[in-house]
Image (cartoon, rainbow, N blue to C red; front, top):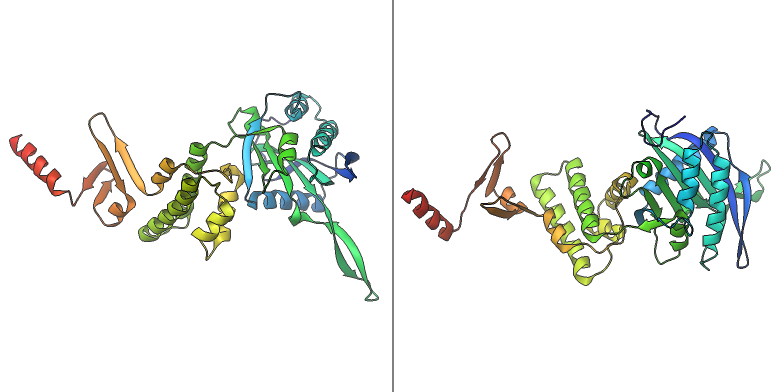
Length: 345
């Protein structure tokens, strides 16, 4: 038996259950066609789950949140609880219940489309996940042995628009954010968010703080020299400040393209990592953005604030062993006051 709290060591992307059903749109009505609820984990199935999870992880325009307490209108949490708490894990019952919920919510959006709905319960890094993705078919051409060309339908894996992932372990441990989903542009994805029963927890200060920490970590991982790191973080602040001043939502695609035009993909993939739980499309908080380029601290007896250039130009140095800070190039007025004070002492 597995534990949703992640107490059992598990291999990366270890699949527990996979199901695939169909959501069909006929005129203005959605119907469900139940398929296989316990697919055998073959190499193609393993590869499909791995690819879907990888592609989901690389997508920007994600939002994160938690379950709504209103389980009557948003029953996904109830279905998941029944699945987790049952002695015999019934993935068929779980996915069939979720399909009914999905069809009801798809009915509310005229732009909603059908497709193959993949469900996968898997583990990675000792955490359990439930991933849901709607994938459609696409046509391509193939040659027969006689060199005739004919149409072949296959899954459009990279073109999926609707996907979400529930961190079952995070939910069981009552973390603040354990659901992620592709937000996209416009409000088409709202029905998928409602299907997941997710309350979108966009908080400007918290989201800006998480972004700032991610940008700093990225700069450290790239081992940028002090000058390059200062330039990178200063430019990031300028871009985010512009969005904050205009009260416009920040897009990670736009941010990465402008901030790192020579290699936007590396930064985009870094920010898209679901484990960072970064919300895309939020209005940055200008006060929090200052921490990209400024340091400040205070005690009951003093306060201090300086920017990164002061470190870069040697005006501020820190000795981690002695835990002391040295300030140079003090203003004349401050030097005069301090000289008088310490001479008197």
